[in-house]
Every structure is written in C-alpha cells, then in structure tokens.
Image (cartoon, rainbow, N blue to C red):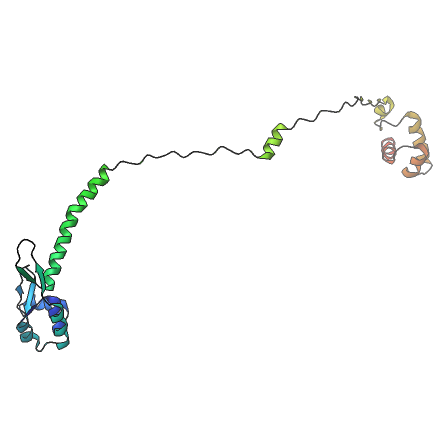
Length: 208
C-alpha cells in the first residue's frame, strides 16, 4: 500500500485537512514521517478509520505522485523522488537563495551613492506691460492759466448793524418795508427792488 500526505489523505476520504490533523492529534489515526519529517498516512490506515476510499481521488493522486527521475551530476546513479519531496527540495532551495540575496541587497542600498539634488531655478518675475507703461508715463504739465484773484465781497455796515442780509442797504430796507406795508407779497416786492425773495423775507422777519 502507498502512503499519502495530509492533503491527499483528506481528498481520498473526502474530509478536510483539519479533520485529518485532529484525528492524528487524538490518536485515532496513525501517521508516519517521511525522509523530510513531514507526516504521511498509509492507505490501510485510512481504510481502517474511514472505510472505502474515493476511486476518482485515488486516480488523481496516483497520477500526481508519479516518481520523478533525477540524474546526479557527480555520480551516475538514479535518485527517485516523489512529487512532494521534489516540491519541498525546490522550496528549500528558493528560501536559501533568498536568505543570501536579501543581505546583499540591503548592503548595496546602504553603500549606494546618494544622487545630488539639483536646486530648482526660480523664474524671474515677469513685469506686465501695464506696470511698465505706468512707470514710464510722464506726468501731465499744468496749463499756464492766469491767476484770477477772487473778488472779496464788501461788507455792508448797515446790514450788519440790523442783522440783515449783506445786500440790503438803508434805501432798499425802507423800500421793502414800505411795499410790505402796502400789502405786497415777497414775490411782488422781488420784482420791484430786484432782490432775492429769500433776502426780502428775512428782512421783513427781522424788521417786524
């Protein structure tokens, strides 16, 4: 009878790997270790515990577990390995190669020169055409206009004495009061004395 690993054993009895491992741990299923120390289960042991095996699964396992022939380079003898044994050898070889390569990569990274950092060149500020035109514009020259002195209004002493508008003289004051006494309105008096209606009304208010 042949021996099988846990994966193939679970496939033959249509159980999960965890179930097979639990049976081994509880002592319900006896296992043996192969040359690499991995657990193996004999076919008779599987039949004893679980009964008849799956024929379909058995054909698949037999096809997968065909022996692989490897020729030794130093000696001309032939070594026969199972599929699982060959897979394990390849895995160990890859792990060994990686364990040697990783320290070399780390050392190379530490000793590799750091590339020089080129400082970025800041572009010169661009002066807009509007600002250039503004700075080069010449100030406008003042026009040569003749200076005209503002005529100072002459102060009316009579109007100031009575608190009347400055345009009211003694003659105009008497004339306004005469027309007002005759019953004329400010608008009508304005036509007679040629004085603004506001000044006439103020004169009447002050004098009455």
